[in-house]
Length: 214
Image (cartoon, rainbow, N blue to C red; front, top):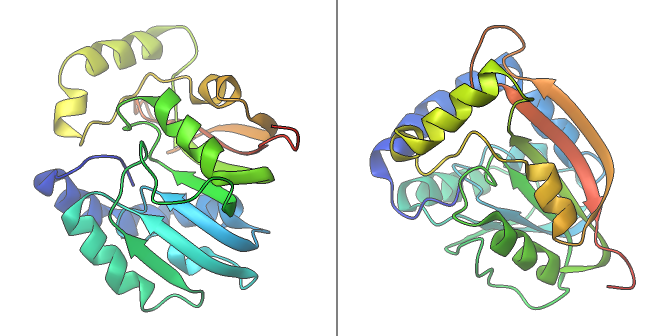
């Protein structure tokens, strides 16, 4: 879920509400995120393992990196129920326990909002991914210019990161992915939930590749 270290209160809240969010639409986004993947995958910030049930059978191994102890324990239990091989490991987005160019795809799911430095985390993802491999991403992001953008900036500068495990609302994650050297090949913008004025509603879901010559 996110790059939090130890945030026991937020971790417990997240683990409690995550199944309900999946029932109300997030599970469909997870399925789209992972559709068509194959080979060896690293999932950065696996949280309590909400993605594990959605990996296709062509995936031979998922290395699920999660730094938060409570969520990592939950993920380990979910790994035993998965129909693909999942290895849950302690680690951070800034220092993945992987060799250069060693995985076929990198998955981020509601995690790039809370890494301390997106550029560092994406550089690590780029390093671990083989040339020609895919980055799959599903993230909430900055709103377009206007009232909601102002609300996001105020919350980020005050209470939101402290109460949400380091999460930030106003991040231009697609731009950060491109700046890290990836080429975005698919990008869908949508709101979740689709109605209301939730400052975390703007989302993106897409695919990017590490160029073959990089």
